[in-house]
Amino acid sequence: MFSNNDVLETIAMVEKEHLDIRTITMGLSLLPCIRDTAEETAQKVYDLVCKKAENIVKTASDLSAEYGVPIVNKRVSVTPVSLLCAGFPSKAPLIGKALDNAAKTLGIDFLGGYSALVQKSTADYEKIFIRTIPEVLASTERLCSSVNVGSSKTGINIEAVKMMGEVFKECAYLTKDKDGIGAAKLVVFCNAVEDNPFMAGAFHGVGEADTVVNVGVSGPGVVKRALEKIPDANLTEVAEMIKRTAFKITRAGQLIAQEASKRLNAQFGIVDLSLAPTPAMGDSVAHILEEMGIQTVGGHGTTCALALLNDAVKKGGVMASSRVGGLSGAFIPVSEDIGMITAAEKGAITLDKLEAMTCVCSVGLDMIAIPGDTPATTISAMIADEAAIGMINNKTTAVRIIPAIGKGVGDQVSFGGLLGRAPIMPVHACDSSKLINRGGNVPAPIHSFKN
Amino acid sequence: MRTVVTVTGKDKKGIIAKVCSFLAERGANIEDISQTIMGEYFAMIMIADVSESKKPLAELAKECHEMGKEIGMAIYMQHEDIFNAMHNI
Image (cartoon, rainbow over all chains, first blue to last red):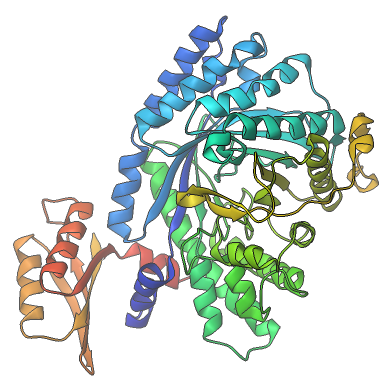
């Protein structure tokens, strides 16, 4: 049984500290939808998504009211679309449009899975598919896209890395009147996970069940408040406090995940133990690091503090959930975290520091605006660096950067809502094109040969 | 189905009477009440069984919260499992 203090603690977490379930994401296999033509396939895709996920919004709203915990996002992830279109890759945008329409019908904000997995090499149909991404992200509203360009097992596909630098630029260019929001809906991964509930990188892996519910928890505000109560504790005690807090947050996620999967007639997939910030005050991962003792995030010591935080969140969460997966760790998007935005505006945090932080956080270079005239090969080189970190360290890394067309350092981009705003960060001016233009693969590291 | 009803806010007359009759009208059976005053601050935690209520919990919870706003108190009705999950191993 729980005590009165426990009850009041939970209510304070929700009322004052932004405890929420960040997302309920329904993963759907679209493999049964493949037909001879793109038109028929698109129709089947629309019908299947609308039918299987028809109750997702209502169920989330009921659960939120019954348990008194806000559920912020309701989303759907689907089988990588490139697999559905191998026979007609140039018509893949029809499927993209059908998925966007399904998201609108369901009343969900994002649907992920306009994706391709090309970690070893890029098949001809995938090359054509990847080239459709900019047009599709510019002409749809709620569809998200991701491409996996490397893994610890396969090495890095530099041909795909080169292509994705160009795709990022084209995405930004085609949506330049909206600050390049097309690029904000695209993620390039190394070691992509197949059960990630978070956007923009969610897709439904082919090894998954037909219909799955994955839940992402959050609560950076709760962790920060917990640390405020122990200002003089040593780092061992800090780690313990984060573990305990992560445990409680994750238990709420586990309960909602089980109940949601039951009501939605889906398999319970995983709980993703992430600390996901929003641009709201009191919902920042950067502020946790500052609470730990860094004057401004980005200063020396930030990587260490983030490593401790990331690890303690996992340790607390793992015991609280029967099935853990997804990305699970602390996210460090720049535009979606008020502490990061402030540090970037002051010039306290740089791309190089962010890259170092991605070695120990859950994902990678996320929601970073760079000058619009950055060459595509430089963007590819940034992707290659991130992929190398992921490949060597057996972790997921990702790049989601926004080349701000017509803007430079000193300007900012603004998307509103959860995507937030970001000052444009300088990138290194030196030319990396020769490395990228060499093509080929970065071979898998020696420690991947474990068989 | 057991729920936890929490009522917090500035103390005033008639809070308990109002909340209890509101719950009774909706078929909720109150199993436990604990209440304290800290300075001017009122805090009450009740366990209420709503199995016999004709309304779904989501709706009852919304009504409780709305009624709370009318009397200037923060009232939450939540399924007890959220507390069991978060505070028990």
